[in-house]
Length: 203
Image (tube, rainbow, N blue to C red; front, side, top):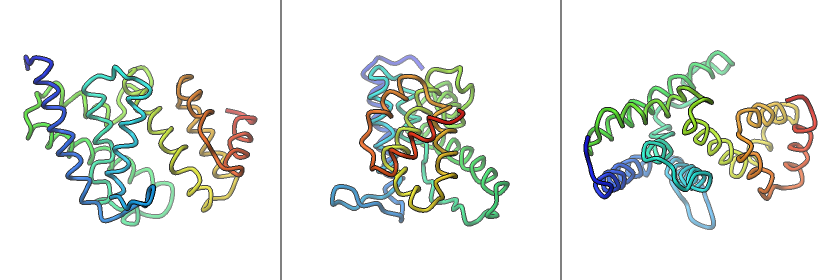
């Protein structure tokens, strides 16, 4: 598709608006700064913010992928799969394909070309990670959203050993720039101690 820069940004805005409208239907909510938000809508905004902080010059496919990475995630609940590791891995794999397919539907509907659609879907599916710089940035942003907004809640439900193992796996996937951002996050005393222990052990 041959488009001027302005036309590309118009399509970017249309696609993000559609992604946000889909995620605004999430029946699950999260309270943030005194306001109740649909959970996946808030997640998409946070992920986009981190991508743009890490890469202010982020490509349009990367911006699109950030906005739709968890598109309509609530439609495939974890509870519909066996509650074991095999069930978890199947759920995660099915989710990635579901998000990529849903993203493709939206992108085509607003007028994006197949090359862009395919690129966004590759990022949704984490193809060529970590060799692909955009895939690395997206993974960095996912890890930072987890550390900033989900770490404390999950730490309240899991044992310290499981949480430390999760932190080590997360850290291993992050770039040096993302690790530097993570070390500047404001964490509670318990979370700080678990991160310290995770980084002190084998990685």
